[in-house]
Length: 457
Image (cartoon, rainbow, N blue to C red; front, side, top):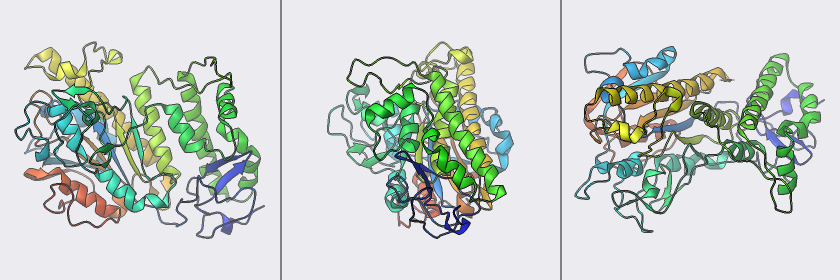
């Protein structure tokens, strides 16, 4: 049995070359165990926080093609939830709707058409992208990467970029703008977007399938045989249970079940196939055909990365800007982008409304998962600041002012959510980002085109 005082936030389960991080448990302390068996200081957990206090997190959830603004953005004289935001009613005290924010650098500025590409490139950078479909792309460093550089050394992964449509760095996707602009919102450098991960299995294996010694063939065989990543540490699971309190037992069992539940859901979407390569097996990369389940899986993986303190910074793109995805599960056969160019057509507007409602339902699921997991005296949502927004306001107008923006979470006690925060017209969106960096302990005089901190949060 291992003494409870030696269980830390750096603790990992080790066995058979596996290393699995642990969630927050009440019995954790700041001491570091260096012995063999349950606890180890592996590469997969070397940066994990050992402090008892909940670390601050931030995430950005991006929805493409703007919204039907009258149903999304609250009217000036109303505090009631708009039709598109009603799926969030159960979390009303956990978020603030912010009106009046704008991205001036997403405007054309003489560059002509290309609002979709410009808006996505500007979304987290606040920068006006160079109009090019070639290799000479140029935007800015995104706010998530500013935060990742400041806090990323404390976790195994500085940041996590997720999405439901692939990234690209070549091709013309919007009136002479590179596909790099419309398919990425996270940028390491002005000329270097960070490609997002779109395959749930790959994300799961990256977060929890870390191995110090497992060959790619053995890894592929384990997945093909439907063996859980937890099977390789089963003996140490039992040993750890003898070292923790009864209250931590419940938390630990819940964690193990949530990990296995995500694995099962990923397995359900995969079709195993033989690989003609020497290994004879391959790691499946299929994604769920049901888009709602896809969004839930990616949301669960983001939550898991926060819960295990594997990263404190994340982005999730529901789709690339300009996406023309159809929604058969909603009875919508036409593409999303096509529908947003509705020109006042009532049937198209009704479809856009339903898509916006579906997006909000999906975000409500993410908030529910963050809220369900306790950490210290609060929840994961309490320690987080989560933006849910589009880079275009009205999808039919392609405008970049009065953007649809929602900020959820309490930012580790630095935010007071609830109600509607009405800012002056065309207040820079980067003012919000500057304030969010503050919740992460990142002090900067400005970011992008910011003019100061956003007051009233």
